[in-house]
Image (cartoon, rainbow, N blue to C red; front, top):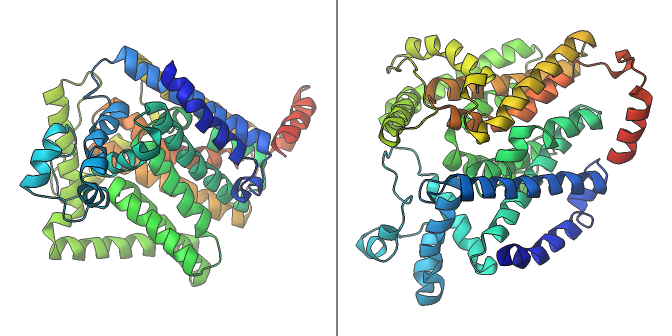
Length: 438
């Protein structure tokens, strides 16, 4: 309770900032609607904290605590050896016996049991926590608030990107701020919070006029995605390239996507041929094997059987339908033995309701809207395919698909024509919704 009280001044400061900073004031949504969304995230962050703190009592294996706890060993060098602290914080000349003996041997997540050629994304989150400790004084709830703020900035950026292409505030508000898994998993000291931050940052600047500042932010966002979640970058790049091709040179959107996929596949093949460690097919196979090994070693309850991948392109292609099915449907009702699966299960039902609404109140999209919908659905399909063929653990799968959910939901909601919704409560609801959001 004392730790929570200590974090209250930080919360008040952040809450006040929402009404003062231009990025939020010019978002297209009222400050009170943004403050409500942020309150919902903070509440969800505390719920996640209490579930992990009291339902799971092993902090070493708890994602929301393990990177926070490991960051202490970097932070303690801030006072005893500031040079070591800065080296570890920025990843400069921080390997070797000196750092292993003084710092890393006391951490549980600096080195992973199954290392691969890809960057160890644990270290980015540990370093971020080590930096936040300078002003948090080791208070977990301050870290929770900072991660929530970063995630919220990303969500507002994503909402502004959607609003640029779809002039409908209530659809965007639902898709970005009210999806259960996005709210829950994007509201803690977790990688998903930072991932939502960089995706939103990228999308918000993606449609802006190209200049140096925009270019630097786009490159920074892509760089963080590369080291944090490489598979998200893999899913995003074909969609972005297709969008740019269609905007600049190729008017046929289907041909733009085909050319984008072929071009990126060719580049990936060349890179994999020159540097075998970065062979995309081998990375996917290794990723699945690592998950299987982890599930066996840690006896993960939510693991399920999946056909093993082989380093063969056709094996990858054949695994995609099953992977997509798992991503779109899990967790199944029989798997709701874990309270952390409830949000994802409810959201699957919600998405079915939205699909039903899109069928019942169908609105034919115009050419511009269709381009936006294709962007959203293509990113969702690419990401779901990658996650689905590599992740044989339901607990990991429901978290990994979080970045795609706003895109999936807004794509579905775009097909709904509000004018066709004829219910007595419609006028009253629309009036209140517009007053709340505008």
